[in-house]
Amino acid sequence: MMISEDVEEELFRLGASSDTIKKLQEFDDMVHEPMSGNLDGSIRTKALRCMFKMLQANGLAGENTWFKAALLLDRLTASSFFRLEQLPLTCVCLTKLVVKCISSVPKMAHEEDPSMILIKDFATWLDSTQSSATSAVSLEALRLHEEKVLGALDWQVEVACTEKWCLVYFTRFGLVGREFQAPVRQLHAQALLLARAVMMCFPMLSHKKLAAGLFCLSFVYSGLLPMASLMPSDMNAAEWSALLAATGNVPQCRLPQAMTLRLMHMICLAMKEGWEDIRAWSRQTVETLGETFRQVRMFHDGQGPWNA
Image (cartoon, rainbow, N blue to C red; front, side, top):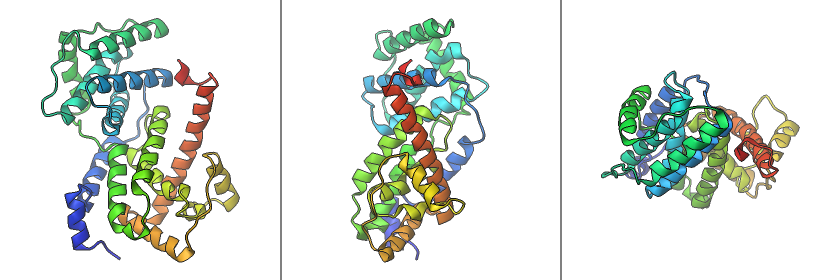
């Protein structure tokens, strides 16, 4: 079964066509080459929090801006350009780049800009906890640093972040799988909530694979798919059940087998992927979710890196 021309036209109107997936894949292939970050987890968490507050100060606190900022930060800190003492400058520059991408008339920076105040506080924290001497934060320093940041990113600021992948997947399923009357908005919101928690812990995950795994798992967690449907071929039922149990209670599937098989086909159509790849990405996501929840519990117990 293929997606009809009428549905494809509607998907194009919604920004979720098959061509959109192809373009997002090209972005993902460019960004997610084997890389290792140069930033300690506690510093990265603090930097992400600071950047989110700066986005809020600019009236852009949506998920699309946060995930884009996080991906740009991870790309930058994994490059040879990155220097810890320049991190405050880098955070401001990346935030401003995200704002410029969203706003047709971005605000001009000034000394009383909330972003400047926030980043100076972050620089003070970084100096005191890391025994570093951060670069002075000024409008002139930002102007000079921004061009260097763009060069380190190969002038590629538009990125295929988790939020964008999730939006495309759930939009496509909303059309091709509408016969199932799934609560798409609710599933989408839950996937983004989990994705944000994961991204706080793991910097260099493929945003596409994380979005794909969360998209598919949302049907399991909502009782529309049996958990066995996503079980990798190299695992047995007991191993898969134990892995899923680390992420919380999984409800029993409430649909008959014939409908779940059709649902699986609709998911493949929505994602334009084969089921074996989907299972592999779901496994990676389940493993990552389990570790994320473990770190969150440590945070609430006052033991994790987020307490820095």
